Length: 428
Image 1 (cartoon, rainbow, N blue to C red):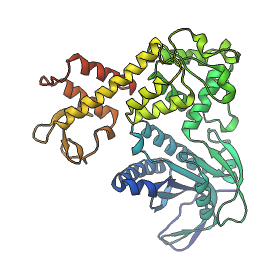
Image 2 (image 1 turned 90 degrees about the vertical axis):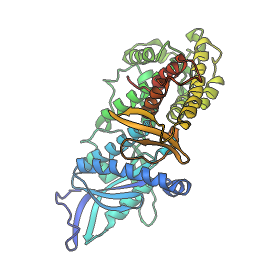
Image 3 (image 1 turned 30 degrees about the vertical axis):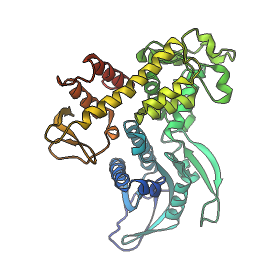
Image 4 (image 1 turned 180 degrees about the vertical axis):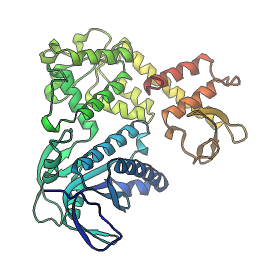
């Protein structure tokens, strides 16, 4: 289906045109709003700013905002696809630095079809179908029609899978749907392929739909997540079950190096030897499943160190030297949290903690509604652990430098802060 390179004019009379259409939507928005309306709308506005930037960068036009979603049109299918991929990539990157309960999940639907513009109203079969396609998308994924997929599969690099014909409400014929999976799914898939395949990543391809940039992003994200845990051991026997286990390295950077070496090795015996088991790695190992690794990464983002320690205690090899070191690391961060809460709760508006954040001096103090950061314009009070790791680090550094701190030895906060920075990859 040909696209018309002609922008709509919502202020004029009725206009019919063919365009690439994008619908976005927040998953579970009503539920989030019922729990914390103010915070949910703040997060929505933040995400809308991100989406608007991507739309503008790719030459799209927002025709309508529908509560927690948008309708956007493009007169280039490739621009539309690039925008959708950019939105989900930016949202994923943003989510990595935020507590889990401060992240909204968006789904996107793409289609090409006719739209009718009549003043401020937007109608047409293409609009209706795109809305239905969007409703079929999973959280953090992109769903698209076969017609749209055929226009972009040879022009934009991405990974997709065919879901088959899907029946949607008020659409008489099933719509054949393709999906770009959530980036977290791609991380698991690509890392498994890279770790267990004898083919080098450079030689691997998804054909026209293999989006190399997403692959690189996925692998880098996994390197970062796993580097926080001093573990590396492949249990090839679990590969058939779509699982893998890991055993220890000596430090986060060593782990990242060893993963890179593993991926670059085309003839590693572990890759095709199903008899390799966790206990073959020698003493001092701890084994984690892929789901546990993902769960630990999520708990790290929400500062749930106690939950991580509890999970590690039950893992095979927890009593090994490296297992005990890992557990002690997260137990020390539990102490770090208690120390931080005690220090920050003692700060007042008249006697705040002075920090340097993004090159600016700011005051931090506690109120009955939460912790405030004032850098000239007083911010909204939030719970301490709703702030980004970079902010927590700045507060911790300022507090540890206070000569009046007598709750611990001066060395202990420094060790805690170093561990915090290591786990959250700060200053790397």
